[in-house]
Amino acid sequence: MSKLDLVKAWNKTTQMYIESEEEKLLLEAENQKITKYIEEEQPNIDLAHLIQKLDIETMDFNVAAKALDTGRNRLFKYARHIGFLRYDNEPYQWAIDQGLAVLRVTTYERPNGETKFHKKTLLTGKGLDWFYKKMSEDGLYEGGKL
Image (cartoon, rainbow, N blue to C red; front, side, top):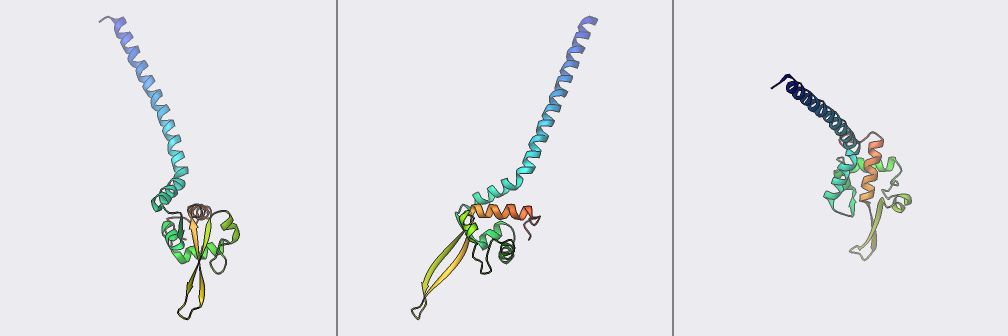
């Protein structure tokens, strides 16, 4: 092999090395962008998985509290504090209008023949998402503990 062939081989090897380093830098930059996007979207991804796992249209505060990794009474207290629920744990009309909550009213008859009403507040998937975001905004969602 002549000196010229050695120089050409060296130049070709050097060029291939430079190209591979450039490609490596581009891939690292792209990887950083993807990683940043995933970190920013992680709460939405977690909640989407949670709602998909629950696979129900509405849920009571027991189920919602477990989904948000907190207690039912804490969730009720927080919902009253932020103006989502009234003092009697019924949702305000704005929450119903926005599709965040549903007030289910059932009737039952007591043994003495008296008809009674029972009201139960249920959250929708949209409502669970709203609570998740609200708790995160308020800095209260660290492992779900209120």
